[in-house]
Length: 326
Ligand SMILES: [Zn+2]
Image (cartoon, rainbow, N blue to C red; front, side):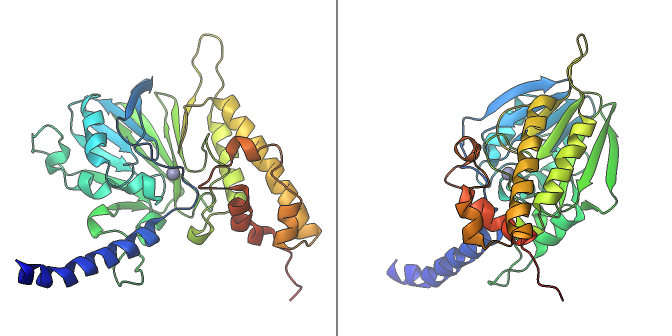
């Protein structure tokens, strides 16, 4: 027994070292703590449901042709996510769409890709699940860390990495627009618009729980994030008497309407202008910018331990820092 343990120890140590590398690779700055099971399931509008609590919000479109899942939640919660999907539909899953490579949005990818016939109910005939994402998501997943292993196993990688500005599909009689938002939260962000259901899935470009999530290490920028918020406002239509308005599913937090989105956009616009002014025009240092409190008015509402005001300014300062003339 002891000798068996001796043999196992180096293996266990190697495994824990690898998993440390993997989590360092996949950590995304700013995402709030995962709430975990039991997950919340609610119908949003039309053919679209929301699954909440598995890390990033998950959107599900279900109909006769099968199921589309937007984002797959945090690692370790995939069983609960699959249980939640079963309460919505027993049809096979045909597509997974990732809004970005953020850890709480791709954690279940490998498990979904491995489902025989895309089925959660044991019927195994039919095509495999196709994972769609902007191609930078595929690139980021393949980045090799210090341990020599890619950030994610190949099974988790999107097989359908699109590089055009927009990827459209028709499924369950509904047009679905998957639209790249360059250099916003990251360099691989997609927003997903279900036209018939009139539901827009924002990913981490928009949250109701955090200061803007700018992942600079993965190509994000506050300027691009603001541009993406404006694009979403262009797509969204406000509630107009008899007609229902567009519902927006944020990366984290509660279902929103266009007015909520506009309020968040206004905040980002003001914060960006303040920081650009302090860091760019006034040429202040990082510490000086922080001391001027450019997020005043929103610190208490949106700041949280995982993504504080300081962490946010650290992330975006360099974008606006005055450069020396060449
Ligand atoms: Zn997220």
